[in-house]
Amino acid sequence: MSGRPADLPLAGITVVSVEQAVAAPFATRQLADLGARVIKVERPGDGDFARRYDTTVHGESSYFVWLNRSKESITLDLKSDAGREVLERLLGEADVFVQNLAPGAAARLGLAPEALAERFPSLIAAGLSGYGTSGPWADRKAYDLLVQCQTGLVSLTGNEHGTARAGVSVADIAAGMYLYSGILTALFTRATTGVARAVEVSLFEALAEWMHQPAYYTRYGGTQPPRIGTRHATIAPYGAFTAADGRDVLFSIQNEREWVALCERFLERPELATDPRFATGSDRVAHREELDALVAERFTRVDSATAGKLLDDAGIANAGVNDMTEFLAHPVLDARERWRDVRIPGGHHVPALLPPADLSGTSPRMDAVPAVGEHTAGILTELGYGPADVDALRAGNVI
Image (tube, rainbow, N blue to C red; front, side, top):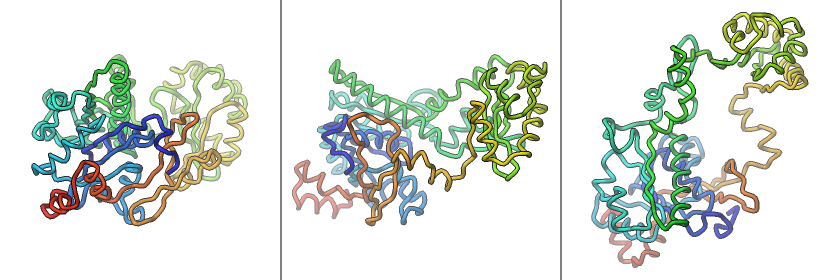
């Protein structure tokens, strides 16, 4: 492993997670990165259905490989009495319980926060739902793209020809990060007050938080921001333009100083800086089509490398529009040594990015992605089950 768990901030913390798909596994992987022991409870047989989203990473799912390193996998049939008994023993030794079961399933299994608090007063119960555990949509299933639609994100994403989903699972990622930070807050609260507080996050409310700016713009502006591709709805010029070599370069003007520099040093039209059509940020947005045409014409006379150099010299932020292959070879990731090899089921090793938050004096845990039920026997032994007990549970399809 890259960093011994004892050296990491969450060493000694045990997390039991009945998790699947993306959001909850993303939250618990952050905890595992910081040294927590994360025991992932999966269905006997196929396990977490995210294992079968695709088979592109040496036969494993790209989602599962991304979300589940450094965890231990135990298989349990939670519909059986014996399976629930094993889970009870696990929870008796855990600090955090995480679940993103279907609506109502946690309560039916006796795993609602109130019930857990009675049996395990020091356990932090963390639940993730689609639309919250109360309210008119409490019983409604939710997936990432459905939530993108419900929060209005899809209506803002795309261009004049139509809407589009965001290219990554933003609702899942938002919810997973809020669940992660909520768990950290609950752990801190328990450490300082002795009180274990439950944590609840919904996909809908997590992404709704991210939608505040366009919501304010719509509420007080009378109309929602338009769909304009890589352009910015409320700032101009801001977007991608095609250079003479056919490559796109995106740049952004954030203030009047940058606008003057763009006119003088890139557009080579200093008089535009005081043109009444473009005098203020609001003026430039109002006359976006005229302005973008002027910028686009200038790009036709320089290649992308030259355009980037001119914009750099003018102090204007810019970037090429990378595809995924270019991202994988990004010089910043290589120069900062952000890649680490992680073992996956089958014995292959794949590169994984270090967590974004660097904590001085520590190295994050970058252990293997588990096979389905890889740690079942070992965990059961820790809980006091003997070899005959484990065999009986296996024969009964409990594990």
